[in-house]
Length: 81
Image 1 (spheres, rainbow, N blue to C red):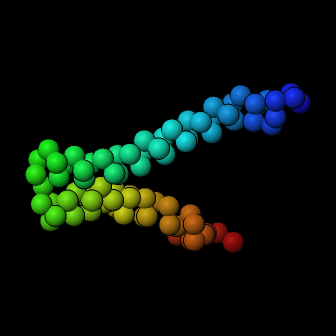
Image 2: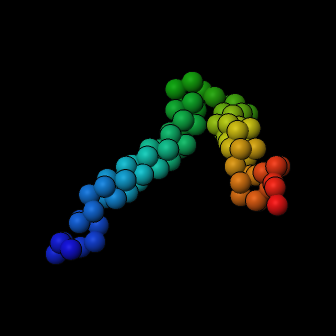
Image 3: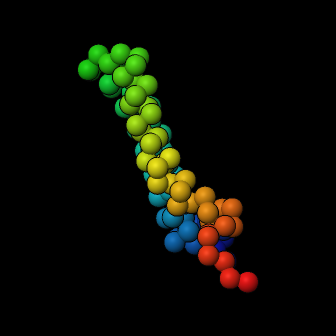
């Protein structure tokens, strides 16, 4: 093992970790910046900002939950024992 530490000796893991961190940071910047830009540049009302936030989370509700929930609960519909 290298003397630099555990993460520095595994370049693939370090790259994955850094990439995941940058991706999550970018996602959070978009979550914050989109309503701020809509309010400042387009003069969006509070109702429009609420709709924007709702529509931003809609793909998760429509795709993520139906696809991911059966795997999390252990019920896939077609279990053979």
